[in-house]
Image (cartoon, rainbow, N blue to C red; front, side, top):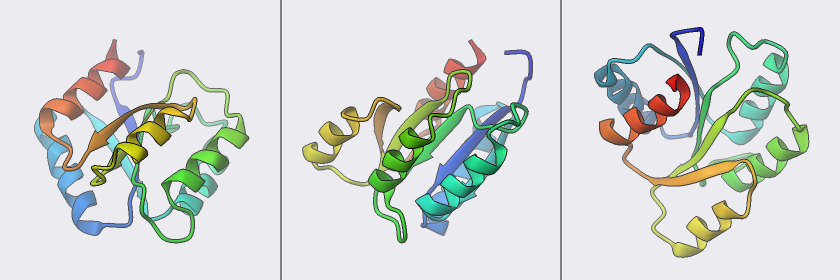
Length: 134
């Protein structure tokens, strides 16, 4: 990766979780530009508006499941229909759900790289950030 900054999009309607993720990012030692959207529709609108801007397009997208307007599953359906052709985007479901059904459902989306249970830890975030840097 030529740019040392990592772009991350967090799609979550919980302000406390957004705050926690920001604090976790600060503790990783990586330079991360984090953008957050409170629902899937705002995220789709955002991604559509920046599709051609490689400088700010996210390297990592974290998606909560339960949100208003467009939930995480609906976001994934809309995201995959966009057919965004970008260098590798690492997309993970980030949820407090402990249901095996949700974990299995996430595997059914070609754009999803994995399922992370909240809260996001420093160690897990470092693993994700290292994927981008390598």
